[in-house]
Image 1 (cartoon, rainbow, N blue to C red):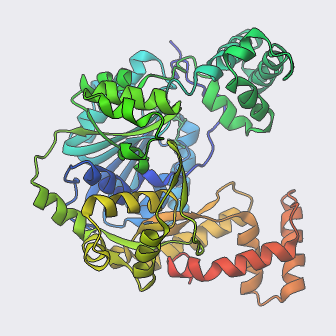
Image 2 (image 1 turned 90 degrees about the vertical axis):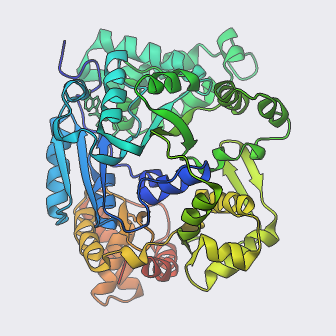
Image 3 (image 1 turned 90 degrees about the horizontal axis):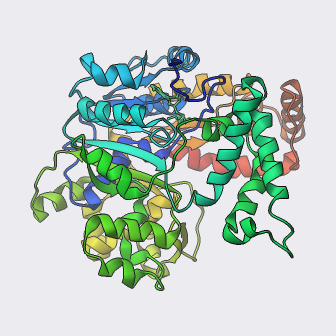
Amino acid sequence: MPWDHGYFSSTSYTSGVYRELAPAWLDFAALLKGHQPPRSHEGEAFAYLELGSGMGLGLCLLAAAYPEGRFTGVDFQPDHIVHSRRLAQQLGLGNIQFQEADFLSLAADPGPLAAAHHYVVAHGIATWITAPIQQALLQLASAALNPGGIFYCSYNTFPGWLAASAFQHLGELARQRQGEASAAKAFQQAAASLTSLLGSEETPSALALAQPALRRRLAQIPTQNAAYLLQEYANEGWQPLYVDQLHQRGAAHKLRFHASATLPENFLELLPANVRPAVLAETDPALRQSLQDLAINQSFRRDLFLRGVAASTDSELRQRLSQIMLRLQEAPATDTYRFETSFGQVSGVPERYQQLEACLANGPRSFGQLLEETQLQLAELAKILALLLHAGRVGFDRWACADVERARHVNEQLLTLIRSGRSYAHLVAPASGGSVNFSLVEALLLDGQRRQLGGSELEQQLLEGLKALGRSIKAEPAALLSAFLERQPRLQALGVLP
Ligand SMILES: C[S@@+](CC[C@H](N)C(=O)[O-])C[C@H]1O[C@@H](n2cnc3c(N)ncnc32)[C@H](O)[C@@H]1O
């Protein structure tokens, strides 16, 4: 058996960053469904393990935002570990380590990873690996958690991936026949051949009629990043699961499904009116989750599992929830509160959202203070905040526990790396315990600004900087500059920039 067990290992992965992996986010999601988080308060020391940490950027940003945390990343791809360790060193992070290891051998002997973590996360792994590796991943996640700890597991689900499954199957067949060297080409060709089997929009083929979503998926393939394309589809173990299948496999390892880190999904009353009654009428939890996913054509889940549930009273839960600190994020003012969610578009009553945002405009507030100031019911406030967090209008506030100076040092190193052509696109936001998007264009503009360049000189320097890296832009430099200037105060408020 090759070392990668059929996982695509010929190229490295992309440097993605996912806000749902932040401890504050995981705690809030757990509390929404009545579980006391593993940390009794924000700022408490904790241990955090990422299984399949990829290029390591996301974990490094968390280590920078949470100085009180101890972070470990595990991945079996040596290129990923070399990259991650070097990045952690370049950023000057002392609270993170990366281990090159296979889930299979760690499941058999977790060594010091055993029962030592408050959080274990595996983003985008479980349904891309073969059955024995998936079983090892779940066994290891469970073994590495403290009782009461949270396991985050995101994965591809049915029915949302049914249409694309024909494409993955054909692409993987073409890859196996053509060999690794032309892997990306095999998938591009599979997309082209499958498209030609769909017929025209006017006279669709039988396949197109049965899988109307396939045409749209295939149209995206030529525009997708080759690294993503291969890591997504070129895995022998690629197998989306129905929700109950993964939940049952987790339960076999003491991992009980608890909540979704896709926050709006914890509020079934937000489901579209035409499917809501059928889902709510089902009382069996597993069947209800399955009906929910079928009703919305779910394609990706971010599930939280618990290893042991701490029974708590309503008042204990209310007390813990009340401590959570929140702040306004980057989002500009709006008077329409329409949220794009996996349940479709959800509209909020503008007055309630405005009232809440007005409270937060005076500075960060705890959940408890917001309850008092808005006079909303706890469940209603929780739902409104879940939607605002989901939309990125509100974030958690960690100003009191953040090491802003250290985070800024990390950001300076990241800026240098971004300007040198590294494909990172995030900086640490210590005030919120997360990160913000930050583009190469913004990094070049910031550099010019610091060198006291004026408007047209700055734009010139931007174009030259991009040219030196072989990049170009379609937008007007002046428009990019004014957008960046407008964004700057919000970045300063988040502690991203001095
Ligand atoms: C799709 S990538 C996700 C990476 C990262 N979590 C992210 O979202 O950017 C899956 C990762 O799991 C790692 N992986 C796959 N099978 C593994 C195994 N058996 N043991 C350890 N790592 C594995 C791969 O090397 C890859 O970095």
